[in-house]
Image 1 (cartoon, rainbow, N blue to C red):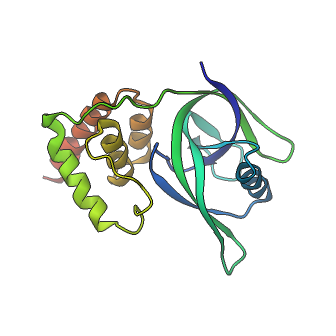
Image 2 (cartoon, rainbow, N blue to C red):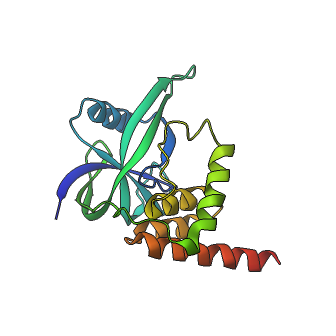
Length: 196
């Protein structure tokens, strides 16, 4: 087990390993969290809210992703904008809210996806992903592509396809990349059947 204590940033979104996410930060507790992260004092993780609202006491899912700050800027409105890339996935073992309202958790950092190659039966999914990424060039310009890696392809598809957040969370929780691709393929087929 790789145990760590990290700050938790509960949001109504899912950050996948290797993927970008733009955040606007204005609450003091999260500005302090970002400051500590930039100084290398404490990692933070993005975790999806299961019930409740951002900024309130809410229930969270148990699996999230460590966020690595890759860029930041101060907006004209004074709000801090940061771009994070997803690092390793983690599972929350215990969480608590500090007096300043910041959530922290004792987490088990999960192993990275193995470098499994995309099998022939999923090659079309990788081709579709490449077309999607080419149309989103600016947003994904800082993300290195690995179109042959099944985990990387599955993560990008899960973050980019118009899935509901529960389905995105299910994908994040699947440890094995080929199982994740299979799950996504089923979700795509189901969505296409609903459209017909």
